[in-house]
Length: 146
Image (tube, rainbow, N blue to C red; front, top):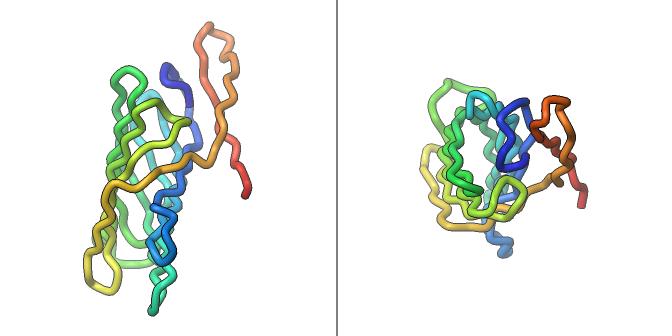
């Protein structure tokens, strides 16, 4: 999504983690409503440890922009469960939606909160600008496999 888009709904996805062996990885998939500054989607946290971590969460939240910088705050609840919060995330994209950023998040696994601080957030989409017919610019996201 371009930094100046104010119309439409967009797909935004990130892989969040250090990439270190055994470290947790968060795959975050969201739908962004530009006019309302709201987001919703899902997150999957995995970690190759014994026992393995496999946490799923339905996320909602908001974003704000200052210049090109984007700040995202999300909370989540289990996909199947009581509706009790199991996830919190803050994502900072200094150079806009389609650039790498930094995230900190916490998640509940087996009744215990786990904190992950200041890890790389890599976008999993590529910007494609398109004309809306009104002189404004919007964009769509496409998933990159690999």
